[in-house]
Image 1 (cartoon, one colour):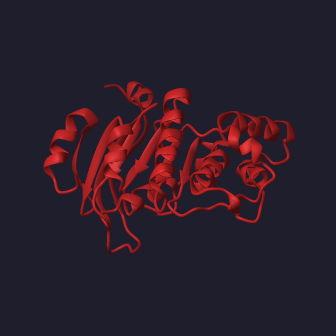
Image 2: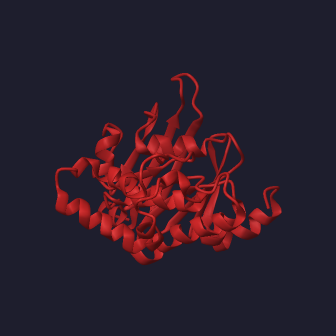
Image 3: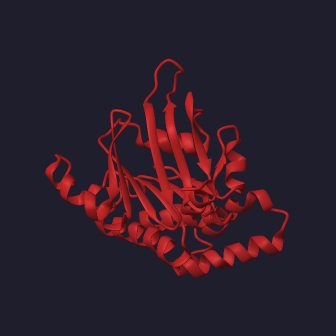
Length: 244
C-alpha cells in the first residue's frame, strides 16, 4: 500500500507506542492501532490495561516515550493539544465536563472558543448542533445541570462538534448512566458515524454495546495488543473469553 493510499484509508494511526506517567514505567508497551475513515473503532479490555491512556496520548495529554501518532498521515507527536483540535481531532473524557450552572447554549458555545470573534460562524455552528439535537434547542436557556445524564452527554457532543472535528476520541461515554440513557448515547455515536461520516475511536467497558456498534475492534491486555479484527469476525472469539 502506498503512503497516499494509507492516508486516504486511515484517519488516525498509532505505531509502536510506549506511554506512561513516568518515563521509566510504560503503561502502553508497543501498541499499534489504525482507525479507518468513517468507521467506529472500539478499544476494549479489562480495567487498567491502558485504554484511556491511549486516548490521552493520541490527544496530546501524555507525551509518548517512544512511537508515533499520525492524523491524516501527519505525524503529530510534537503538535500541542490545542493545535490537534484545529487539525480535526476531538476528545470527550469519561467524566462529565459540562458547566452545570451555565445554560445549555453557553456550554455549547464554549466549543467555539478558538473562533469566538467570528460571530457568524459561531451562530452557524450552534444552529447545526440544534438541528442535530433538537431537544437542546428546547432547553437552550436551562442550566445544563438540570438535564438528564444522556442530555448532558448530548451537550458535550454538541460542544465538541462546534469545531467540526473529523476524528472523535470517546472515553467510556455511558459510565454512570442508566440503561435507557446508555442506549441514547450509543445511538448518538452511530448517527455521527452513519450520517456525518465521523471517525470514532471508542474506549468502553460496556462490551456488548460496543460490539453492537463497532466496525473494528482492538483488545488490549496489560498495555499490549492482544487481538484485533472486524467486529463480525471477532465476536465469536470474544464469546469464548471471560468478558461476555
